[in-house]
Length: 564
Image (cartoon, rainbow, N blue to C red):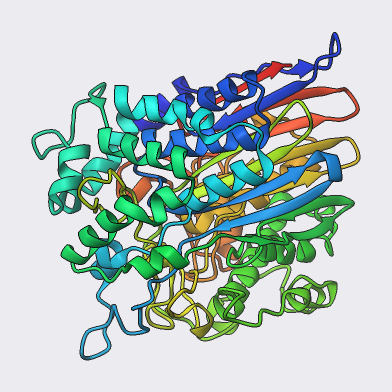
């Protein structure tokens, strides 16, 4: 209970800001106070939401090394006010050129899990540095020397680690010890540092300085690139200089649809978020949920989750390698077909939907931030290095903690990854391919309000954003949306996971009688009572001309508003 209690004590700062004296409100909510303050400082210096996004991304890379970093990737959902356009920046990692379908299988084709989640071989080519340079150059107005300065200062001067850092460092202690460079940076005398220990990262500061001077090329070419490749190869990885030279981000069209008149804009493949949300909400819109009792409402929501995740496992992957039937999956026709398959009084075993595979555990990592600036520009960004502390591998001299996102591929069809998610050939490993993701940065827009929202949480990200959308349509406040209890079903394992107070005793009894298997499991990686996501939200009320922000009480983030 210590962890969640600390999270509540470090809860949000909410200061509704109104248009006054010709000033407009702005707000930032992120998973760490130092990152939020970095973004706020940039807006105060004349930057826009996109400049602030660069600052927040870089700051999170320093102060949340267990969640994101320059060695990872992410999705940035941008909205430019001047032309009313939404764009998704796909900075997802790519498989190295020397990757192969069987790189994590033994001679008998058995999956070797450790190879996919620890060490240099588990790392895809990072996208964050390229995205920072791209967003800054195309959408921002301040130079990287300004927007990366807060992160550089944090890396040089250090910051106090907290209980969350210690929790995740303890979880990955063995893996961190296995890499001398990671141990030197993130541990103290090869052990988890005490709370309030000052963590400094001078090599990371040097790499950030290279990026301020040369943009993306400061990372993907030159001395940093050579250090990265040399370090990876010495760690039995397969990176090459060509991998780094060939990496690019992609600008993609987000998935957009309506639910009860509310416009939803969310991440497109290689994220599964937008499509899965459209499927679930398409099914739910066919019901008059308010006319049903609470247990039946939740039963229908669970059944919608189950079916969307079944489609995720079957159809989704990198759109540059697969023909994904997006229009079919998010169509009303498809939703109606799924509705016919749902029994209002009884759970549908997942094995009756398609062939079941073996279940595995779940994870709750990654990070998120939400921004609305005083001009109306918006950013919703979800970033990750996958498992806590990623690959637990740092190429010497770079300060770059590498991701273990290769685990997000289907190393073997039907075998679940570290988050219990299974996949088909569409998400198999191939050179330069981007693995399927659950990261779901999202905009929600009604006639009077716009919400910028997202959360970490591994396979549970999509259903958490679903809860946020449903709460928003009911008129919930920013505080209520991030605080409300959550439940989740992901097709396989065939189980409803829920946090304390998400279901009443009577609901548990009725859902069990309906045939659902329920499990109260909200702890991060079995570490006791802990988190179920870490949602960050900013809402602007167009009618009242007010802005509110909220940071999930399950984390230690901070939400700040101001006038400019």
